Length: 156
Image 1 (cartoon, rainbow, N blue to C red):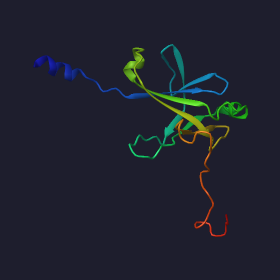
Image 2 (tube, rainbow, N blue to C red):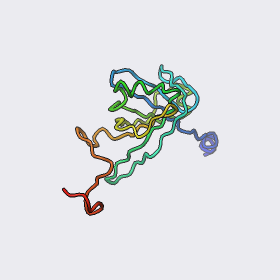
Image 3 (tube, one colour):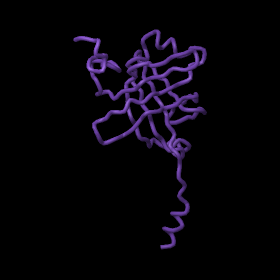
Image 4 (tube, rainbow, N blue to C red):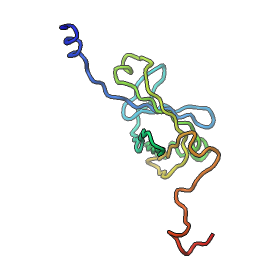
């Protein structure tokens, strides 16, 4: 059918835009987006240099622990760390098609994590290690255990 062919040729592939909502421990929110600021669903998503790495969605048992790295100009986010508002904060990533942002459509894919650890923080950047909310509820496992046989001088 000719109409299907015409509609098929009109299709344009849109890229996904990642928006990050961080609910701090005091109940306030940060709305972040890489690079430029956008308006979507009545909120201003502030454009900042950031990166999101280490996320995978495998069907196996392995849980991913992605890292969100955000610019920390002159330590602006350091006060949140000092006040205990970042650790255990809820981080939600919204993956939204660019066209849905332009047309303010409430269509998205959502994934939620807990900010579990801060592996690195400087005056210029802050890293948040994210974990699944069900990954290690009520306890923390060290990143590395110093036990035999790998460390024979340690005794239990």
